[in-house]
Image 1: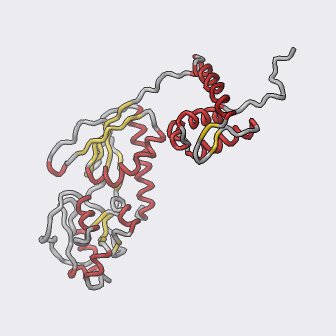
Image 2 (image 1 turned 90 degrees about the horizontal axis):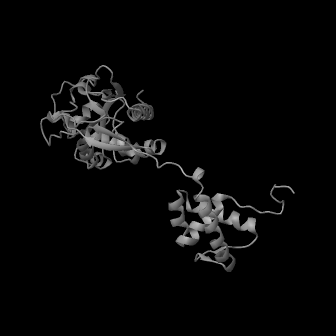
Image 3 (image 1 turned 180 degrees about the vertical axis):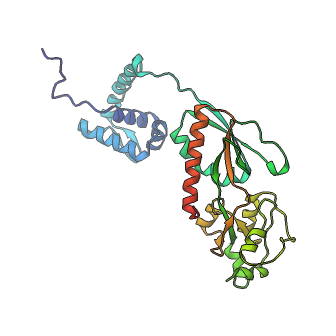
Length: 299
């Protein structure tokens, strides 16, 4: 007698059985989707395929309820899944997480790193990041970390992240209140936001303007706060397109002129440890910043 499965068998897929069991047990396609880490539509399609395979409905929709056949089938499926789960070869050791500490200046963390973290976490689910903030301008040493992001000269062994440019930007609400800013000299009629982290002098010289540094208004010791003040129409900011990408894409800020000059300090990265996690994070962040630079159009 042959041990091969009979041609009359209609064996369903494991994915279909898991989708049906989760939806029936939880009473919701959405909750089943969360459990299985797929979309609700994917759960629905898997159940529909299972029902087509069996030739009868197992669940009614709107509301989601078991049919008579579904109730009987659910008990059988749960027994089968329990037997499969008990097979030693189907179990894997609990995944161990590797914790990696990262220190970063606040603006880089807020504008560049945090929005991109889901991409890294999806590619490296076994690495748990701990993000710490540093405030180097206030002469406070960065907190101990395996990977340090900083603004300033790149030391030996460090890697460049963003060696970018700055250019004037302003909120449309501010521009609506001012005379037209058609040329750099027209900035004489506009409030210029100031920060010791990025002086205006290099850009003003490149524009042929022998003006002193702005001396009026709030002094922001944080590039992110300067961008936020500009977005609130408080003045013109000399901003980096890389850090202002969200504002520029959303129309909250607008570049005023084509003229741009190198930023006062590049952003860089240095590893204080050589773990696989630290190297993986460094490679990912360098590649992400290169893509960010290309999108901003200054590389």
